[in-house]
Length: 137
Image (tube, rainbow, N blue to C red):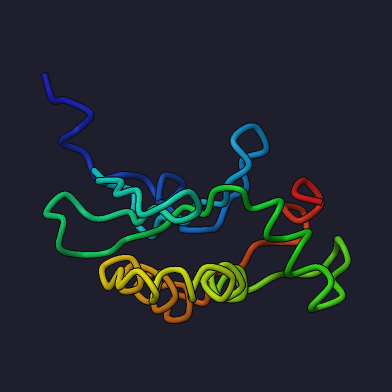
């Protein structure tokens, strides 16, 4: 008897990466592939998501997104609930807020983690949809 794992997935089962806001945990998560992932918590805001080898960055999680959205992004960009937001802006806003602390302590690894998340978000053009913004607002 053939196992379902031996079959090619149908086109309806293909993974489509997108940024998702989770209301219960107040976080935005983006993972570009549906595979085994390793979560590496950097600080209270940023978690990097690596592939199973821990060599390739495949995503990130932004915790406390509602605060960053309300305090930094909404007033800065005069956002309404129907707009998209590029998540590079969210990472930049928080990184700016904690940047002096990071560099004062010489936390090179933490600064590099933020730069890696920024690069992934920019290269993948990761955006949060207007519908997700309504939940965050």
